[in-house]
Amino acid sequence: MMRCQQPVKGRRDQRGVGIIEVLVALVVVSFGVLGMAGMQLTGMKHSNDGFNRSRALILTENIATRMRINVQGVANGSYAGFDSETDANYCNVKPVPYCQAIKGAEAQRCTVDELAAFDLFSVSCGDWGSGGASGGVNELLPNGAKLEVICDDAPCEGSSTYTLSVSWPENRTVRSEEAPVVRRVQMRLRP
Image 1: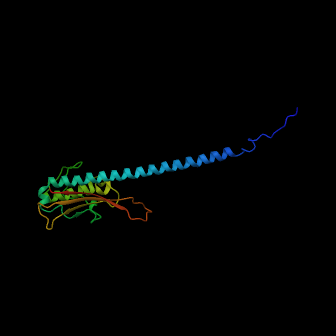
Image 2: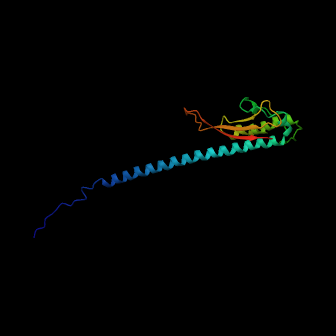
Image 3: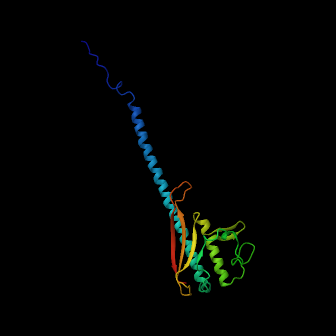
């Protein structure tokens, strides 16, 4: 009996198929990893946006509390019309008198108007230390952030309401052609 030799199919016809399957799997996994990286970046961006909003709210509440404490300064109009963006060197000069105790020095006595000027400096620029002012709107929020205190009545009176506003640019990049989106936290206050 003679056996017929049939060529073995399979081995010879499958040459290279394993490599193609591996490459296809590698491409699919690569797209999955890229998708996960994109989701991570989006999550970090939204987390940073929320963090900036929280800081802005704390700073807005800070100036509101200071205005509620210094009722006579509000009645005198000492807070009205303030915009931290108007003077570029505002945070480079320590206010005199400095109405808060700092390391090595006691708090100086201040009139209600001087206290108002100090309050605006403290929220806009932060506390004065050995390296200058730090910790205010200008440092805690992205570059271009500002504090505004606007009296809603003209002329401003003791019973007037105020709009307190902290704004900052979001999504600012060096190479971005688009204008940054300006975010804002506003509060209405009747001291």
